[in-house]
Length: 554
Image (tube, rainbow, N blue to C red; front, side, top):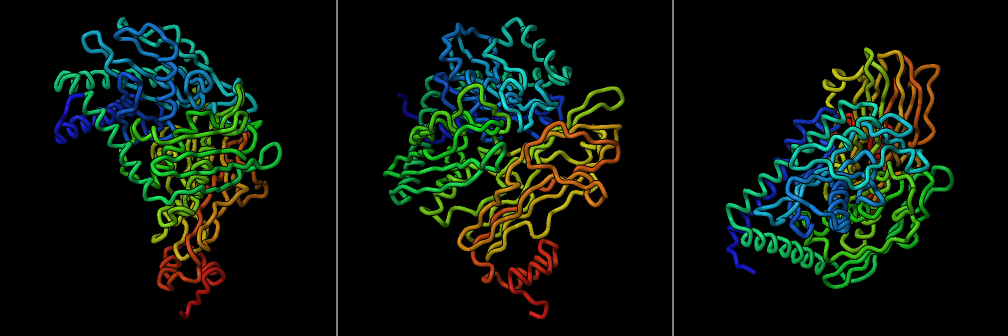
């Protein structure tokens, strides 16, 4: 292996990361759907010729599982791959995907006829067919209800786009023009990655780039090993519950064993796979575990394949974290959020100063659909919630956490593109758990129907199981969906996994996302901080009095 100086390694590494980020910028700017161009529900990455992740943009951790899974499936298929070929899939069981709306695309990259790596991206498509508009209702009971299932298939060659797979996707979506635009945006993105990766290899030479990426992978391994040496050896356990669906709540349990420079996670004791779409396939489980470990052990470890080598994961076959086909998976992110929670909860016993209380830890994914001026629309949104309180600081308000990293859709864009009006968008007082450090607040968002009718579907969690506090901190608030709040016909929807709720002109759908847990005894919070929370409307006078023992005369 060629020996390099550190500066050359860093320059090459930065070039690869910059390429991945440019791929993401192209994907967002060229896309048609608000879900990609505004909310950034997409990710981009580069892999070496062995399919090992070498660079990723700062996107969504859950997507890393799908892109790695696609390349693994491509290599395992032993297909003849030629320059110019592009492949896609969304299959959670045979293509490395994690749910059907996420279409993954990869382009093998060649220089002088030799495979040097892969340019890949993934994008969440607003509708991919299935029983409900948006293809993302949490109460589906089979993968076949959730949308079009795309096998590993060639999407383009050196001669251009293969029209048959594109036609299949368009035909099975309620928004065919949007699907075409988003698919072609993904194609433009991987082509940018191909061009830039070739340029890096031509500028520095293949052997130099290989040596640099090998160094970067080894650096991540060593950083993780060093971080693990700071954790006391032992086995650490934690468990939490998913909200119940058609039966009792499902337990998510983990035992994390740290042994020197190795770490293993055993999910034995986790409940059986669910009859509804909250099951997590292996690539999604792995992506979640890698995120949670990195966040606690060393957030600055470069997120590449070298990090993954020291981690072992065991998940019972037929469980909610390793289901049997064709178990539904569309709402797998809610369970991934709970997996992140239990990993963090277990590590809190080992390195308590590094772990926050539970965040809202659900995606609160809502979808409105219907007709407007003769055109069908699908509006998807993920509503933020509270971030868990930390050992030295309050939790953050209205943030995405853990395996999601998408932004909210700005009200201006929402109201311009869809027949909806945002009546209310505010923080929910008292939603953060009380503590020496208060939990972050959840969000209240009221959406009014301006068209003749609309259909609402959603998946969310933490509407029955509260985000937990740590070290005496109180739990955070629950989430909920309410139709027509404050009116005679006000009613709460039964849980977070609903589909096909019919709304009429003038109806209001209120989304309330969960808050988060507090950290430390509330009695230890300083009166000045309580007074500041009161002044800013983050807590009510009753909470100040009952939870913090605060009196206005203090």
